[in-house]
Amino acid sequence: MNDISNYDVSLYLDFNIIITNLDLVDDEQKQILVSNIKSKILELKELLNERQSHRQHIPNVGKQMFKQQLALVETLEKWIIDFENSLKEKN
Image 1 (cartoon, rainbow, N blue to C red):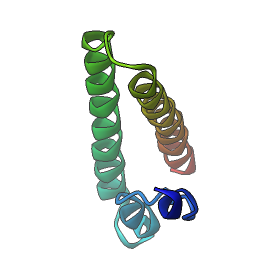
Image 2 (cartoon, rainbow, N blue to C red):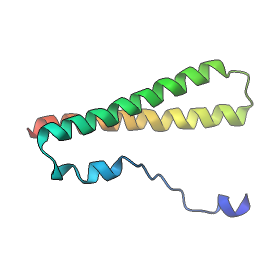
Image 3 (cartoon, helix red, strand yellow):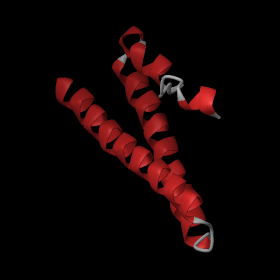
């Protein structure tokens, strides 16, 4: 555990491959791809909220991990909404 605790923190997100290449597709396809990513982020948020409400009995460490995951997904949700709006404004 000591070795891993000294690793660099990685926040690699698979969908960034799509975001990076959005300029290669037409506007309609961009909108579809971003909408798909947004949908999956919202699904994850819903799943985490559902799981958290059913696991109130878990130890503090587990509760803190849920809190971390919810904070990350809420940040992603805000980001994807802003990103989606910026694409609409550009058009």
